[in-house]
Length: 253
Image: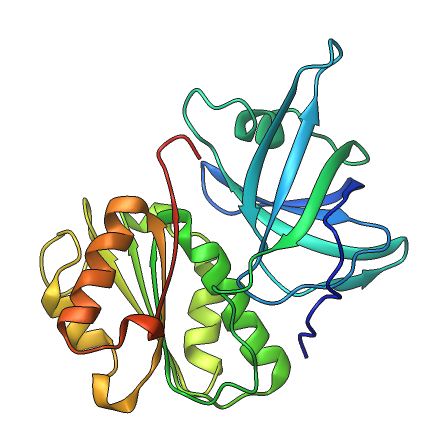
Protein backbone atom coordinates (compact mmCIF):
# COMPACT_ATOMS: atom_id res chain seq x y z
CA UNK A 1 0.00 0.00 0.00
CA UNK A 2 1.27 3.50 -0.82
CA UNK A 3 2.42 5.53 2.15
CA UNK A 4 2.91 9.26 2.29
CA UNK A 5 6.56 10.30 2.37
CA UNK A 6 7.83 12.14 5.39
CA UNK A 7 7.60 15.90 5.11
CA UNK A 8 11.20 17.00 4.76
CA UNK A 9 13.13 19.54 2.68
CA UNK A 10 13.69 18.31 -0.86
CA UNK A 11 17.29 17.30 -1.44
CA UNK A 12 19.16 16.01 -4.44
CA UNK A 13 20.08 12.33 -4.25
CA UNK A 14 22.31 10.33 -6.57
CA UNK A 15 20.37 7.58 -8.35
CA UNK A 16 21.72 4.96 -10.72
CA UNK A 17 20.09 3.25 -13.67
CA UNK A 18 19.55 -0.46 -13.06
CA UNK A 19 17.13 -1.33 -15.89
CA UNK A 20 15.34 0.15 -18.90
CA UNK A 21 12.25 -0.98 -20.80
CA UNK A 22 11.27 0.15 -24.28
CA UNK A 23 7.62 1.23 -24.30
CA UNK A 24 7.28 2.75 -27.79
CA UNK A 25 9.62 4.00 -30.51
CA UNK A 26 10.00 7.26 -28.56
CA UNK A 27 9.38 6.32 -24.92
CA UNK A 28 11.31 4.24 -22.39
CA UNK A 29 10.86 3.40 -18.72
CA UNK A 30 13.94 3.90 -16.57
CA UNK A 31 14.29 1.94 -13.32
CA UNK A 32 16.41 3.95 -10.89
CA UNK A 33 17.98 2.76 -7.67
CA UNK A 34 17.74 5.55 -5.10
CA UNK A 35 19.37 5.12 -1.66
CA UNK A 36 17.29 6.44 1.25
CA UNK A 37 14.23 7.11 -0.93
CA UNK A 38 11.50 8.42 1.44
CA UNK A 39 8.56 6.88 -0.44
CA UNK A 40 5.93 8.53 -2.62
CA UNK A 41 2.25 8.58 -3.54
CA UNK A 42 0.81 7.68 -6.96
CA UNK A 43 0.58 10.83 -9.05
CA UNK A 44 3.70 12.54 -7.67
CA UNK A 45 6.72 13.45 -9.77
CA UNK A 46 10.47 14.02 -9.45
CA UNK A 47 13.14 16.27 -10.90
CA UNK A 48 16.07 14.67 -12.70
CA UNK A 49 19.25 16.70 -13.13
CA UNK A 50 22.20 16.12 -15.45
CA UNK A 51 25.60 17.78 -15.12
CA UNK A 52 27.95 18.09 -18.09
CA UNK A 53 31.76 17.86 -17.75
CA UNK A 54 31.96 21.65 -18.08
CA UNK A 55 29.55 22.08 -15.14
CA UNK A 56 26.47 22.96 -17.20
CA UNK A 57 23.31 21.55 -15.60
CA UNK A 58 19.88 20.76 -17.00
CA UNK A 59 16.89 19.48 -15.02
CA UNK A 60 13.45 18.23 -16.05
CA UNK A 61 10.42 16.93 -14.18
CA UNK A 62 9.13 13.39 -14.75
CA UNK A 63 6.13 11.63 -13.27
CA UNK A 64 6.74 8.54 -11.19
CA UNK A 65 5.34 5.56 -13.06
CA UNK A 66 4.67 3.17 -10.18
CA UNK A 67 5.22 2.33 -6.54
CA UNK A 68 8.63 2.09 -4.92
CA UNK A 69 10.14 -1.41 -5.13
CA UNK A 70 12.79 -2.91 -2.87
CA UNK A 71 15.87 -3.94 -4.83
CA UNK A 72 19.07 -5.71 -3.77
CA UNK A 73 20.88 -2.37 -3.62
CA UNK A 74 18.10 -0.27 -2.15
CA UNK A 75 14.73 1.26 -3.13
CA UNK A 76 13.90 1.54 -6.81
CA UNK A 77 11.59 3.97 -8.58
CA UNK A 78 10.45 4.17 -12.19
CA UNK A 79 10.04 7.10 -14.56
CA UNK A 80 8.90 6.91 -18.17
CA UNK A 81 10.65 9.33 -20.52
CA UNK A 82 9.19 10.50 -23.83
CA UNK A 83 11.71 11.82 -26.32
CA UNK A 84 11.29 15.56 -26.88
CA UNK A 85 12.45 16.81 -30.27
CA UNK A 86 15.51 19.03 -29.80
CA UNK A 87 15.32 18.43 -26.04
CA UNK A 88 18.34 18.67 -23.76
CA UNK A 89 17.53 15.89 -21.31
CA UNK A 90 15.23 13.27 -22.83
CA UNK A 91 17.50 12.34 -25.81
CA UNK A 92 20.39 11.76 -23.40
CA UNK A 93 18.26 9.64 -21.07
CA UNK A 94 16.98 7.51 -23.96
CA UNK A 95 20.08 7.24 -26.18
CA UNK A 96 23.14 7.66 -23.94
CA UNK A 97 22.31 7.05 -20.28
CA UNK A 98 23.59 3.55 -19.46
CA UNK A 99 23.03 1.00 -16.71
CA UNK A 100 25.19 1.97 -13.75
CA UNK A 101 25.38 5.66 -14.71
CA UNK A 102 24.38 8.25 -12.10
CA UNK A 103 21.71 10.93 -12.29
CA UNK A 104 20.58 13.34 -9.60
CA UNK A 105 16.98 13.00 -8.43
CA UNK A 106 14.87 15.25 -6.22
CA UNK A 107 11.46 14.43 -4.84
CA UNK A 108 8.82 13.31 -4.44
CA UNK A 109 7.03 16.49 -5.50
CA UNK A 110 3.31 17.33 -5.50
CA UNK A 111 0.40 16.70 -3.18
CA UNK A 112 -2.67 17.64 -5.24
CA UNK A 113 -2.57 15.22 -8.17
CA UNK A 114 -2.45 12.09 -6.02
CA UNK A 115 -4.75 9.17 -5.27
CA UNK A 116 -4.94 7.33 -1.97
CA UNK A 117 -6.38 3.82 -1.55
CA UNK A 118 -8.71 5.06 1.19
CA UNK A 119 -10.48 7.24 -1.41
CA UNK A 120 -13.56 5.20 -2.40
CA UNK A 121 -15.20 7.59 -4.87
CA UNK A 122 -15.28 6.38 -8.50
CA UNK A 123 -12.24 7.53 -10.48
CA UNK A 124 -11.93 8.80 -14.05
CA UNK A 125 -8.44 8.97 -15.52
CA UNK A 126 -7.99 10.88 -18.79
CA UNK A 127 -4.55 10.87 -20.36
CA UNK A 128 -3.11 12.38 -23.52
CA UNK A 129 0.13 10.92 -24.90
CA UNK A 130 2.76 10.57 -22.18
CA UNK A 131 0.22 11.98 -19.74
CA UNK A 132 -0.62 8.32 -19.12
CA UNK A 133 2.44 7.98 -16.83
CA UNK A 134 1.06 9.30 -13.50
CA UNK A 135 -2.32 7.75 -14.32
CA UNK A 136 -0.63 4.37 -14.72
CA UNK A 137 0.98 4.88 -11.33
CA UNK A 138 -2.53 5.31 -9.91
CA UNK A 139 -3.80 2.19 -11.72
CA UNK A 140 -0.87 0.18 -10.38
CA UNK A 141 -1.42 1.51 -6.86
CA UNK A 142 -5.07 0.45 -7.00
CA UNK A 143 -4.06 -3.09 -7.88
CA UNK A 144 -1.31 -3.21 -5.25
CA UNK A 145 -3.74 -2.07 -2.55
CA UNK A 146 -6.37 -4.62 -3.55
CA UNK A 147 -8.84 -1.76 -4.02
CA UNK A 148 -12.18 -2.40 -5.72
CA UNK A 149 -12.86 1.31 -6.32
CA UNK A 150 -14.43 1.64 -9.80
CA UNK A 151 -11.92 3.08 -12.28
CA UNK A 152 -12.34 4.27 -15.85
CA UNK A 153 -9.35 5.17 -18.01
CA UNK A 154 -9.66 7.09 -21.29
CA UNK A 155 -6.35 7.26 -23.13
CA UNK A 156 -5.89 9.55 -26.15
CA UNK A 157 -3.00 8.80 -28.53
CA UNK A 158 -2.11 9.57 -32.11
CA UNK A 159 -1.87 5.96 -33.32
CA UNK A 160 -1.90 2.45 -31.81
CA UNK A 161 1.91 2.41 -31.98
CA UNK A 162 2.01 5.38 -29.58
CA UNK A 163 0.30 3.55 -26.71
CA UNK A 164 2.68 3.49 -23.74
CA UNK A 165 2.33 0.39 -21.50
CA UNK A 166 0.25 -1.24 -24.28
CA UNK A 167 0.58 -4.86 -23.14
CA UNK A 168 0.11 -4.07 -19.46
CA UNK A 169 -2.98 -1.98 -20.21
CA UNK A 170 -4.47 -4.87 -22.18
CA UNK A 171 -3.78 -7.21 -19.28
CA UNK A 172 -5.12 -4.88 -16.61
CA UNK A 173 -8.22 -4.04 -18.63
CA UNK A 174 -8.90 -7.78 -18.75
CA UNK A 175 -7.86 -8.87 -15.24
CA UNK A 176 -8.31 -5.88 -12.89
CA UNK A 177 -11.91 -6.07 -11.73
CA UNK A 178 -13.61 -2.69 -11.82
CA UNK A 179 -11.12 -1.13 -14.25
CA UNK A 180 -12.42 -0.11 -17.69
CA UNK A 181 -9.88 0.98 -20.33
CA UNK A 182 -10.88 2.88 -23.48
CA UNK A 183 -8.81 4.49 -26.22
CA UNK A 184 -9.19 7.53 -28.44
CA UNK A 185 -7.07 7.89 -31.58
CA UNK A 186 -6.39 11.27 -33.12
CA UNK A 187 -4.55 10.33 -36.35
CA UNK A 188 -4.84 6.63 -37.13
CA UNK A 189 -7.14 4.07 -35.52
CA UNK A 190 -6.65 0.30 -35.50
CA UNK A 191 -8.74 -1.93 -37.71
CA UNK A 192 -12.11 -2.59 -36.14
CA UNK A 193 -12.13 0.51 -33.95
CA UNK A 194 -15.52 2.19 -34.04
CA UNK A 195 -15.55 5.76 -35.32
CA UNK A 196 -13.02 8.01 -37.05
CA UNK A 197 -9.83 9.45 -35.54
CA UNK A 198 -10.58 12.73 -33.80
CA UNK A 199 -9.56 14.99 -30.95
CA UNK A 200 -11.27 14.46 -27.62
CA UNK A 201 -14.68 16.06 -27.31
CA UNK A 202 -17.81 16.23 -25.21
CA UNK A 203 -19.20 12.89 -26.38
CA UNK A 204 -15.98 11.06 -25.44
CA UNK A 205 -15.85 12.50 -21.94
CA UNK A 206 -19.58 12.02 -21.40
CA UNK A 207 -19.62 8.42 -22.69
CA UNK A 208 -16.50 7.21 -20.88
CA UNK A 209 -16.71 9.29 -17.70
CA UNK A 210 -18.87 9.06 -14.60
CA UNK A 211 -22.06 11.06 -14.03
CA UNK A 212 -21.37 14.18 -11.98
CA UNK A 213 -23.93 13.21 -9.33
CA UNK A 214 -21.69 10.28 -8.31
CA UNK A 215 -19.04 12.85 -7.31
CA UNK A 216 -16.13 10.97 -8.87
CA UNK A 217 -12.50 12.02 -8.67
CA UNK A 218 -11.28 13.07 -12.12
CA UNK A 219 -7.57 13.06 -13.00
CA UNK A 220 -6.49 14.64 -16.29
CA UNK A 221 -2.89 14.68 -17.54
CA UNK A 222 -1.34 15.59 -20.89
CA UNK A 223 -0.34 18.59 -23.00
CA UNK A 224 -1.69 21.92 -21.78
CA UNK A 225 -4.34 22.32 -24.49
CA UNK A 226 -5.60 18.78 -23.99
CA UNK A 227 -5.86 19.19 -20.23
CA UNK A 228 -7.68 22.52 -20.46
CA UNK A 229 -10.17 21.10 -22.96
CA UNK A 230 -10.97 18.03 -20.85
CA UNK A 231 -11.18 20.01 -17.60
CA UNK A 232 -13.60 22.49 -19.19
CA UNK A 233 -15.73 19.64 -20.54
CA UNK A 234 -15.92 17.98 -17.12
CA UNK A 235 -16.91 21.19 -15.38
CA UNK A 236 -19.47 21.83 -18.12
CA UNK A 237 -20.94 18.39 -17.41
CA UNK A 238 -21.50 19.41 -13.80
CA UNK A 239 -18.38 18.12 -12.05
CA UNK A 240 -17.13 20.23 -9.18
CA UNK A 241 -13.86 21.98 -10.12
CA UNK A 242 -12.24 20.79 -6.89
CA UNK A 243 -12.81 17.20 -8.02
CA UNK A 244 -11.10 17.77 -11.36
CA UNK A 245 -7.39 17.33 -10.72
CA UNK A 246 -5.05 18.32 -13.52
CA UNK A 247 -1.38 17.88 -14.39
CA UNK A 248 -0.01 19.36 -17.59
CA UNK A 249 3.18 19.71 -19.55
CA UNK A 250 4.30 22.07 -22.26
CA UNK A 251 5.76 21.29 -25.69
CA UNK A 252 9.36 21.55 -24.42
CA UNK A 253 8.83 18.87 -21.72
